[in-house]
Amino acid sequence: MTRLNKPKSNLAWLWILVVVLVIVGLVLALEYYNVIHLGFVQSVLELLRWVRPNG
Image 1 (cartoon, rainbow, N blue to C red):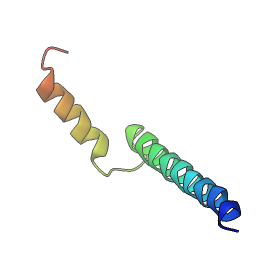
Image 2 (cartoon, rainbow, N blue to C red):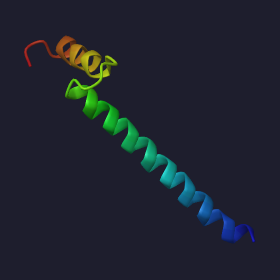
Image 3 (cartoon, one colour):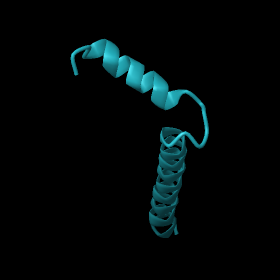
């Protein structure tokens, strides 16, 4: 019985990971297009500007 439950458990973790990645991607996309303002994209752009000032 444990062998049958293990793949389901792995599949559940995979679905959770996919859902989390999709949500994060949507939040970042909405913020990038100025739909919402959380500051993530702005912080990343500031960091990139600091790391590569000429880029």
